Image: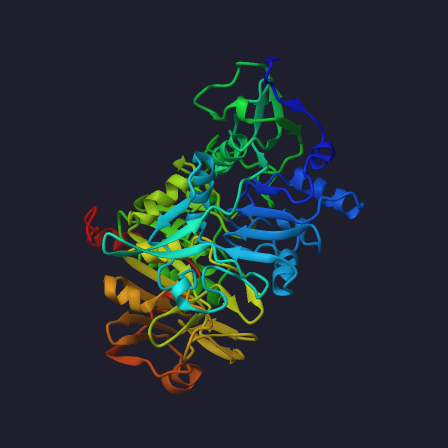
Length: 535
C-alpha cells in the first residue's frame, strides 16, 4: 500500500471524524449517489449523545426519499446550524427544521451549487452568473427570501447584485472553507483511486473532494468494493487517490433509493424500450402526453420532476425516444429518464457526464426545450414552484433551466387539493373540484419571471388536464380546452384572474384521454426539425 494510501475504516469510525461546527459537504443527487451508510452513522452517533453539533451542511440538491434516507437522517435539532442546498423537497423531516426556524437555511439554484463546488476547489470567492435575476434569488426583490434565504433566522446575505459590462449579474459567495466531504463511488483500489462504474450519475464528487482536500480537510468515500492497486482503468477513475483520506466499504450499497443495481442505468447493458411499461392512465399522464406534443425531432430536452418526469415513458410508448435527446440535470444524456425514486437516472443512457458540465451547457442556452411543473401562475406569466404555504422546497435546477431555454412547457393540474378527474369518451369529467386555485392573481414567490421571459422572447406553454395556455406579450392566453370541459365553470371560474382568450380556442386532442399509443411517430417525423443552434 502506498505511503499516502487512505485508511479503511467503518462507517461509525468515519462518523466520529465529524466534529462540532464542521462545514460538511454531502455528495449525492436525489436518490442516486448518496453515501447512505456514512449519513446513517452520523445520525446514530448524534442520537447516542456523542455529537456532532452545529454543522454547516452543503448539498448540491435534494438528497432523500421524502420521509426517509439521505438528509432525512439529519432532521434533528442541534445537529445542523446552517444549511446551503439546491432543493429540500425530498427531505421532509429536514425541511421541518427550516420551517420551524431552528436552523439558518439558504437555497441556491442547482447549477450555482455545483459551480460553488468548483469555486471552492479552485480557491475562488464565489461565482458570477445571470442565473436568478428577477427571481427570489435576486437581492433587489427586497423580500425576506431574497438572496435565497429560507426563513427569518437567516439574515446574512450571501448573494450580491453586480453590474458589469452593462449587464446585471448575481454574485453567489462561497459560504466558507469546507472541512469534511462525505461522498461515494463504486470501487476503490488500495491507493484510494475511485471508479463509479455502477453509479447512475457521477455528479460533482471530484470537485467536492478537491475542495475539501485543498482546505486541509478530511475526505471520506463510501464504496461498494475494493480492488488491487493499479488494476483500475484510468479512464474509469473519477477521483484520484491522493484526494481521499478514508475509505468505508458498504457491500450492500444501493444504486438508487429504489434499486439495488440496474446495469441498464449505469451503461453496463441496454434493455429494449419495449420492456418499459406505460404508466397507468390518469390526469397526470394526460398532461405528460399533451406536453410531449410540444417535442420536435432533434430536440435536446431537459425534464423536471413531477408530471414532466413522465414524458420519457410517453416517448417510449410512442417510439419517438430515438428521435430526441432527453437529459436530466444530474449529468445523464440520452436514454429514457426515470422518475420517482429513479429520478436523475436513465435507462440506456448514451452518456453520463459530471453535473457541472451539464449546467454549463444549460446555462449557455444549449437546450432546445424544457418541460417542468408549476404550482402557481399569475397574469404576468410568473411561475412559483418553490414556496407554497409553509412548504419551501427550493428551486433545484428550475431557475437555471427556465432562464436559459428558448421553449418551455410548464405542467400542472388546474386546481389542487381534493381534485378528482375521470377519463373517458376522449375527454374528461370533473368529479370533484380542487380546493386550491393554481392560476392566481399574484404568485407567492417568483421562481420564473414572466417579464424576463417576454423580454427575451421565450416560448412558454402552460399545460393542464383540461386546458392549455400560452404566454404572449399581452399576458396569459387560453388556446385549448379539453372535450367535456365547460369554458366558464370549469376553466375561467377556477382562475383568480381572467386570461386572454384566443380567437379560435381549439379542442385538446381526444387521443390524449384514451388508453393505448396515440401513433405519434409518423406525425412526429413529419414535423420540421428545428435547425441546430437556431434562436
